[in-house]
Length: 392
Ligand SMILES: [Zn+2]
Image 1 (cartoon, protein in one colour):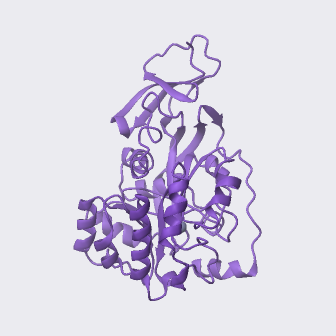
Image 2 (image 1 turned 60 degrees about the vertical axis):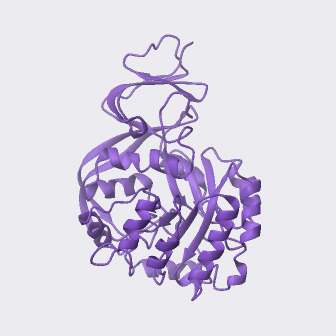
Image 3 (image 1 turned 135 degrees about the vertical axis):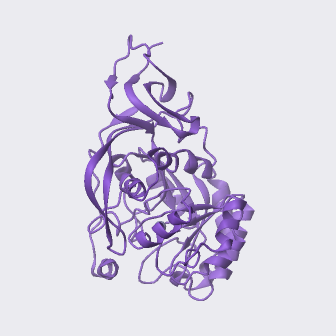
């Protein structure tokens, strides 16, 4: 049987199979059919020569915000412009609005959308009055029930700690852990200024995720040295995620961690209304390029945006891999050489010499040109300006 689509001659990087070699990828019925050299093009209606380019599994962004019913969300269709074929929502909704998020966004989007459900009943709503100033909003039983009912799309529990949990951060953590235990799913914990990082790290379970690991606003886990709790958590199987966003990535902090060989497990954007546009314009390829800039290898940046996030989600046979039978999600990209200024969320700039540029995205066997998805961002209000002023 001929392939529906055949990519020929690209350098195929698939860390899930320890593969890094020039070859072809054949797609049939929305699935990866075959990898190899000189695959048979006979009868294939769509043969694309991608020699000189890289081919990897479609990217998985473990942390973004895709529900426009609050002030943070962005249409997840934008992901196709960046090479992301699976977008994970990091707790934009809670148990009350997740079902509507599913019906109106998740079930309709061309890109796969999975979601962590926030322990706060309505998820994130507004940056000026955050979700857990009042602990009564944290509802373990109802959160676990909604996750259980939507297990195919609801992948875990989310909690943000720091200013948004006032002085009851650890109590909020207990409630989020109770929900995650009851539903049998991972917990993703956002840490920011004021979060009790060392105590949080002590309590996280194997498979849980700490996001914003390099936020640089008083990181307690990465001071002069990496605290023992961070190493112990990693040993136990806790994942460390970048979650770049508009306030959560510091060159200084990341470099200090890299100098001590403490690397993130997953690279993610924390894309939302405040990080998607000027001054930061975050994309996942840009976050990957920033990691190249401070010494991570190309294979590693692909690993941490494909196979590792797939494992975090427990979907490693379906996504984040080019193994035959997996969903046909692929990215074709170039690595451009030059001098590229990369800005962190503290507006510090470092020059990189390489930049990842998406050229073709394949989602379930269908080809999309990056940049061609028309996405409208919501209007900005006066209340949004405080967030932008805080960025600088
Ligand atoms: Zn976020």
